[in-house]
Length: 279
Image (cartoon, rainbow, N blue to C red):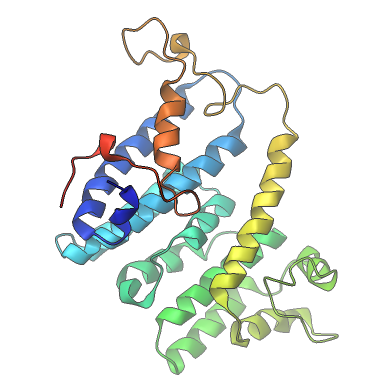
């Protein structure tokens, strides 16, 4: 069966998330124990895709009402920070890619947002990531004082934006992500302007993730002659996984089965090999 059905079936999502966390821990432990040089960008990018799916499955499975909400948020937050090595860039991108950051799941999403917006924002694109998370958060709270309070929190957390960001905005590099700034807008007022501006947050996130992906692609393509955890044949001698003499395709086959079910990739793949079929 098509595993994308997990996005609409809480019971199936509950089964999938259990397998997902096992696979995430497996890859994370392998990565920590491999002694050869690795391309960390490749690892982080692909683990971010897996974590987005895991986060969505945890949130969807909460519909069953069988697990405490605080426990769910704690698991998601811990997974993000541990598996992504406290990287603000990848943690925030993972959250922006998630499907179920919507009002019906606000009890789970808001504590996650609250935890991650405190991450460092010294880099221009990290500022945009945090800003977009704040905008997602704002959609989950009632109009009035709660939204005004959130605006103030965003201003105190993010202001002033990095000079590099203002230069990117001025040059039109973020024209599909953020509204155009009024001429001569003071840096201290930029965050409040964005928080109070009306724009399609989901479309902005989509455009931003494309820009972010291009930056990462350039970074990955600049790294040459590096042993790649996912992209090159896995050496059995480096990490004993079975009694077979060779198993070069082991890592690649697992990654292919999982990544094909990522929300940003093909919807046609199946993970039934990893979980029992439910109705």
